[in-house]
Image 1 (cartoon, rainbow, N blue to C red):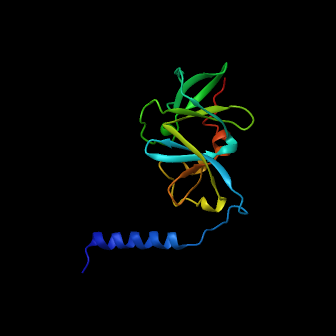
Image 2: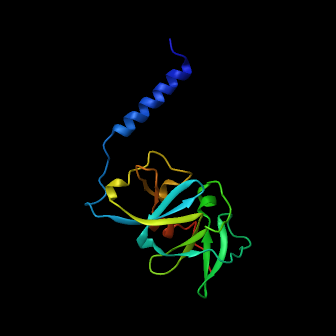
Image 3: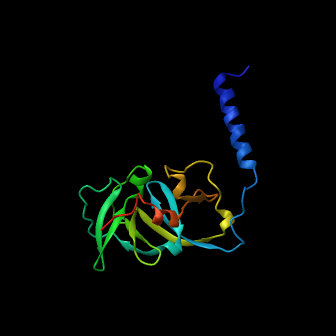
Length: 174
């Protein structure tokens, strides 16, 4: 006779197996590849499609903004323009690590720089096929579903750049 804990564990594991065995609900593309910029936040790897990344810059001076939301890290001067910098760790509820020498700002924008995202480190630009980005079973690492494009098999959390740029929560009025 099994204990209630082992029966519950078996039930959870069987449900996970059923979900993982399901075929993908939707194929996301015709085989083209997406270029994504990989960066680290806390102990997780995140990425955003390269077309939404204007540039990656070394974190210089960061001035706090009084009265700004908690996730607003501050503002910085980017070649004479004031750029708001958002700490996605705080925005997504992921534990913060602090600013280090490897910290970078991933500057996002459609046609021009709109805001920067504070990253613990920036990796590389990699190509993935759209069908390799799987629908998440649940929000990953505290990320709200509306900002999540999907997750790769190796655990890379792919953010939706368009949703981040369109989010009224991230708009900073000048």
